[in-house]
Amino acid sequence: MREAEAKLVWDTFFSVMPYLVYPQELRGILERSLGESADIEAFVEELRRGISKEADATKKTDGQIFLNELRRRSKKWPPSIN
Image (cartoon, rainbow, N blue to C red; front, side, top):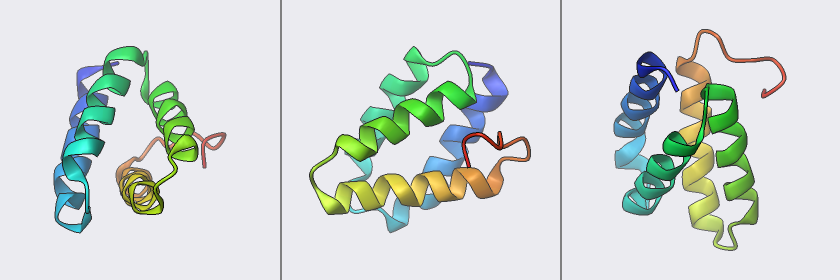
C-alpha cells in the first residue's frame, strides 16, 4: 500500500477514535490489514470481510464508523467498494 493511503487510514482512525468502544482492537485489525493489502481497495475489502465475521455488534459498529469516515475522507473511493 502506498504511503499516502496508509496515512489516510491512520488519520481516519485517529479522528474516529473518540467514538469507538474498542479502539485498540480496531487498531490491531488495521495494522494486520494494512500489512496484507496491496492497495486501499484490497484493504477495505479485507476490513469489510472481518467486520462481517465479527459476532459482537459493538465491534461491528466500530468498524462501520471507521469505514464511513474513510469513505468520506477518500477522494478516490472506488465505486465498486461503495
